[in-house]
Length: 134
Image (cartoon, rainbow, N blue to C red; front, side, top):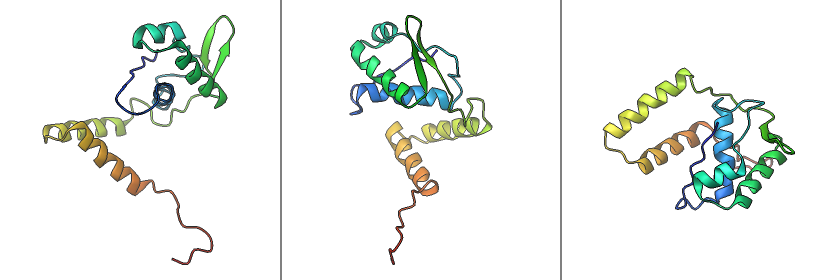
């Protein structure tokens, strides 16, 4: 089961953090079709957030077709996003890299900036529009 961690200083809306963390768990294969999400009450007890915030996040996930609410039973995963399983060799390489970065004295924000920079280099959005001669 996924355990949500809310960062109140991140500037990211709480419901969005829940959506993002659920999607991350789906991508890593930590949540799979048929798995039950924690109840709104369980999330509220663990994070001290408003129950409506949890329900808003779950509705967003349902709108995207990732989960389904079953009346009286809870909210269940409909489909996964697991393209990078948690036991992937790439994860262990990234884990080793993060450890080296920490040992080199980099702070989390430094690592985040470096990683996002590399991602932006390798996963560019095509910004060249048709008819653009530049």
